[in-house]
Length: 186
Image 1: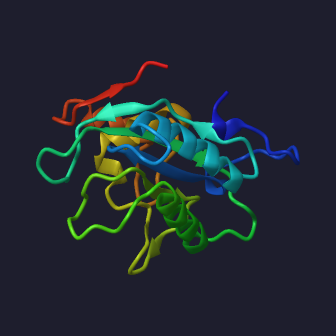
Image 2 (image 1 turned 90 degrees about the vertical axis):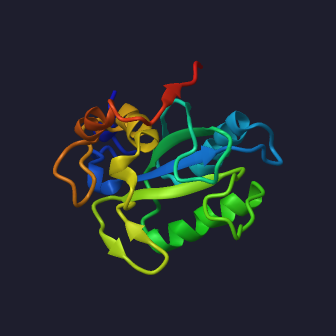
């Protein structure tokens, strides 16, 4: 069953504008284990932020993109959640940053340095936000297979705000790109 067609506990239909999508990534061990273990545990922790069952993509392995030379490969995934009624993009971003810290992420002077956990807010329903610390939809989501392929698994017909094509259409356009990505077997 597609997440976009799932029902809420109140019996109403979830629509794309109700949902938040978060990308997860790890390319170094955390205090909780390997990158695979870290991403799986982070998914469990994100369930706390959702009023409905969390929708989880498979785990994907890909080369580090826009990272320092010789950076380890990333384990990536995407989750869809139904935020609390009072949740805002800014309040959710703060919670995601706190969770990164819990998993051992420290601010680095090197941009995109290896990290135990990276959580990116991809979209918050259909909201468009342009602030110093937050841009929604995520400005690079539509050009990254490591976001689009996991997102396609849980919301193939989703059209990100400011885009005209679905996640599936965007992923298909990038499928011949040089971005190396493979699904990690369960």
